[in-house]
Amino acid sequence: MKRLFTTVLAAFVLALTLTIPAQARVPRTVHWVCDVPGVGLVTFVTAAEAARHGIDTANDHAGQVFTDQFGEVCTVR
Image (cartoon, rainbow, N blue to C red; front, side, top):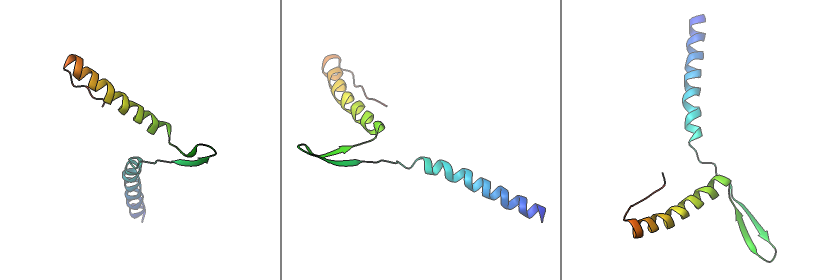
């Protein structure tokens, strides 16, 4: 009986350790959409999404400048 309990517990712990990293990869995005008087609908995003947008925008502009002036292809990873 003790061996069965230990086996079931070990299987449960193993299953739990495999599911936690799988849940960590799920993107959790939240968009707050507010109706601002005089402005209209405004969408607020998380800081990470805003930062990624800024990095992508800078990458597009800087990458084009480096390509035009220096002949180098640059990207953000």
